Length: 541
Image 1 (cartoon, one colour):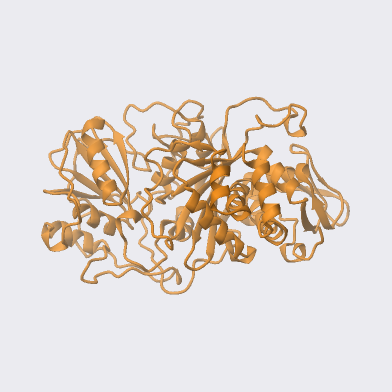
Image 2 (spheres, rainbow, N blue to C red):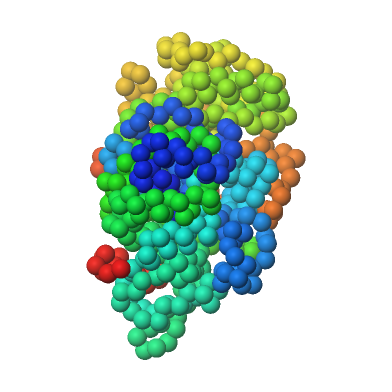
């Protein structure tokens, strides 16, 4: 919820005033350089867009006497809340995915495993976190928005507090949360933040005894997501639909919100227009399914069989429209920036979401790797690179993500996609067998719905690897080279290995209708949520 307030603040910038005043306000916002990490701005105005929204645990902008600073030490800036918000301007729908901060994944650029929240404290900052999310979950990031504790508290204060209906008294000694009464309560700036941060929540039973929610951060996620909807209801009803109130929110947080340097004034205006007609009921919230993994420290590992059902929404696989280059995440791996960089730039001009990785590799021809849902993306790459290529199927690559290993090569990239009939027949046939959508209509795209429907399986005898390259670099689960890698600064790494179902291949695709219904999944299902959303909508304040 801390992270969602970041986008709310940005929306207020545009809702508060016209284009001219928005431009004046935007000039005061700190921007974050994310270089190649975000997707190029090639979208149509009605295309869905993904925002990575980060709430940091930094209290640097708060007064030293603020209650939140009690007992705190400076551990650097970590991502306390990690959310991906997908907004579809065409339908008015929005989906919010929360990624547990303790999720154990390979961290970019090193490839060493650590908690995902540590990526923000790496050498590349926000860029490293974006690349970590892209390479592990196969979803593109269009824009980046970051907020800290002070901004959250100021938004709540300008809105006059957040009314919520509590079913039980609750407390958390670590954050200072204390709600003594049930029924409608208005949470001020300190208590709202204490609730949003509560990872050691206790609730009082009717007999007066106190119980503890054992789920920690996983219990906090569904509480945050539900409270975000309560906050949206308050903000839309009394906040950003009122230009004066919206301007107050914008001015109160303008100095403590950060956005990526590519988020333009016009895009802010578009976001504001979206929020002026938005309803809290239109936001569907999903926690990323995960399970406990303890190896001397408490981690979460992704439950991939469940997670893929939700990730499809954010990967752009639910639209029923043919895949285009901007839907495809491409890592171009070369032995030098001089070799890989021009290829990355050329693919970017074709609108691929392309990034460069420098690694000491050697290739005779480019090697294109793709996963269970990446065959169509690999087909588009094959149509982009002139000359022969080799294919490798990697069941651990998520979404429409493709990896192109060049070694010391610098192949020519076409100025436009070549016709499919110009592809090598063996390359085309393998990709079609793996489910690639073709210009002639083979393997048409589908929309999410029935989880029992399955995609076309590879034809009997289809090779798992067209080429086995003994000299290829070792890759981590996110496909980033790990040979000789060192941990990022500020990360806690572990040598423990546990595939725990990771890498299990799935070709699940879904039929007509809608994404899986929001709700508590996996290890979040035991979380305690003390706020009644429906009753909160009727609370005064």
